[in-house]
Amino acid sequence: MASPGASSSSFSAALVAEDFPLVEREEEMGMAPDKYREVFDLAQRGARAFRDGRFDEAISFYSKAQNLRSGDPIILSNRSSAFCMISQVLRERSAADSEYQPLNGLDPTTHAELALKDAEKVLAIDSSSARSYVLKAYALILLERYQEAREALLAGLQVDPLSVTLSNIIQKHFPEEYAERKSEHETMTYAGVDLMPLFVMDVVLPCQKMALNIFEPRYRLMVRRIMEGNHRMGMVAIDSATGTVADCGCEVEILDYRVAEIEWLQDISLPEGSQERKELMERANAASELARTYIRRAREITRPVRRTRHLDLESMPGPQDPEKFSFWLVNLINLRPSDKLDLLRLRDTRERISRSLRLLGDAEQICRVQ
Picture (cartoon, rainbow, N blue to C red):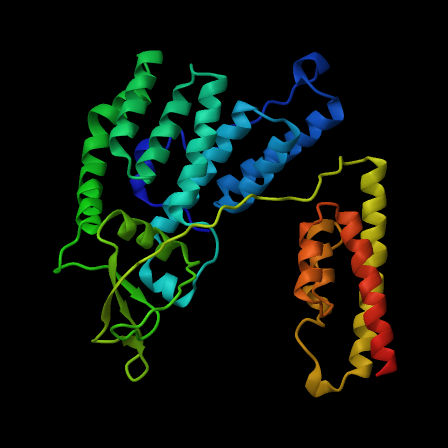
């Protein structure tokens, strides 16, 4: 994921990955030493991913660290920064990139909301940090709640009157960088007949009704803005003769709009060096060998013309990432949706591998019969 442009430069002092401290004394750790070292390792990996511009990976590492050390202000602040950066990147993504390389996932507004939640958690823990107020303000600006962002910065100045960062943003950068964006937002939200957002997908005729499932973050943000205004947009298609947007489309009205509520789930993390972790790695290694055997036998039985891409050893993740490997293993098998859902709900990687192996054994028996 590319780094955001200059629009976040005013907040650059806060939008960084702060180093998690490495302490030696157990009383300073506040938890068992092995757990603290695991948190430190995850935080370090998150910081490296952040500095390399891999913000989604950074969020994953910080979330795992947060699960082990709940309420740590450094981890929460760093995750808030990563959410802000992803939101900014998605906002700056060009329309051409969205059309030819569409993304799935959360839209920029949802990332900004998650950034705001983390910043507010940090402020609840320690309200004396100027960085927390800057993070909160930047998340609010990404949410286009400009007055609240200004109030957050002013509140930070009350706590830390000598903060150069807060003063600079308030006195110089804030009005200059965001007045134009606010004006643009209001124009788009309350657009008249001369300006209308376009949704590029298919030909729609007057009086036609259709249900849309929107996944591309750029369009999800656009629909949010439309719903704040007059609920209307243009629907156009790509003209196959020219390869560009058709010269004729249809104005439509969004009658109902729902955003799915989500909760991020991860497999239960097993401490490095623990007996449970060793057993998991042994099970993953054994499963990888069985998977190789299954694929070789399936290729021998299946005619070449019927070979499918999912029977591909090159795409197999290493067993050093057991969670990812367990899902790759599941994809070798042609399962009913209900069986897939059961495996998706599992948070125990060992159990998912065990179930997959049993299903793989059943599938192998079927192959032999055929």
